[in-house]
Length: 162
Figure (cartoon, rainbow, N blue to C red):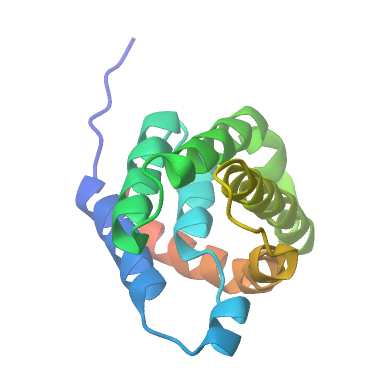
């Protein structure tokens, strides 16, 4: 058994930081409806590319950071992202061999699961859920997936993240 050292952990960290920065950009309400779920996409990518390094724990922590950044109920994004990370890891070998179009459809389904959990939690906490404001970003998340995937793969190969 050979032990391989992990390389490029800082790259993984900074891609999550970049996604958090994109999440916190102030936008008008109409643009917020069309803004993709950047942190979810980065989480899906890393869970798919390096499931032994980025998993449910990273998803939980990233979700907690989103909760803190957005001032929402602590743990709601964490729960949803942990579930998305779990599903991505369980399906990562299948998703990786899909062409980008089919990967985008899979990302659409994973982002919908994330949004439905967020809607469910908002409903449980007494907030009137607005379906369109939660599901519209899932469509743009799927549309942005091929470009983000190619960019992240380039970064992963350029900095030899393993």
